[in-house]
Amino acid sequence: MRMLFELNVGSEDEENLRRKIYFSWFLATMPKEYRTSIDCESLAEKIGIPANQTVDDCVKYCTTSINKYPNGAFQHCMLGKCMNRLELDEDSIRCFTKAIELAPDIAVIHLLRANAYGLIEEVDEGLKDARTAISLDPNCYFELLTIPFTTNEDTGSKYIRTAKQILSALEKRKARKK
Image (tube, rainbow, N blue to C red; front, side, top):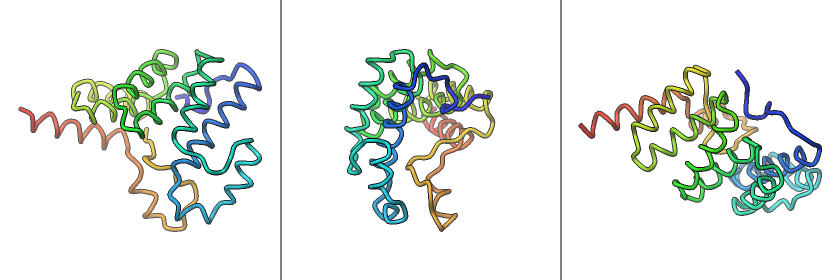
């Protein structure tokens, strides 16, 4: 089982862009109450980005990286997460689909697309992706928010969605439609 961050990188430039994407997302989506536990200014400075990041900034880094390295599944996946956060659900599905074409064995991408399909009520497609994610990695999950450091263990758990939770939610939604 491969993880999204284990995908091969073609060059140092691509790796630097991937870092900017990840940390831009990290800074843009981190709840304000957690910002005090991390020196965001120093972190941003090390990566070479401003500390005040928005999801639109992350979109810019993703787009720049995709233009230079169009076969980067990580970049397409992160752009999909941005589109999802911006409530551009159809666009997020297109990004996740491209990422899956480039790295079909990464469970979390299937899971993210399953969630996106669920948001637009395409339950059958979402179920297929959730089942694929489980078949690739039964313990697959993603975090709704980036919360890397928390002193309250209960706080972090409510932001995580496992493949089994998403599959269950989609199955319930499908049953209600019958």
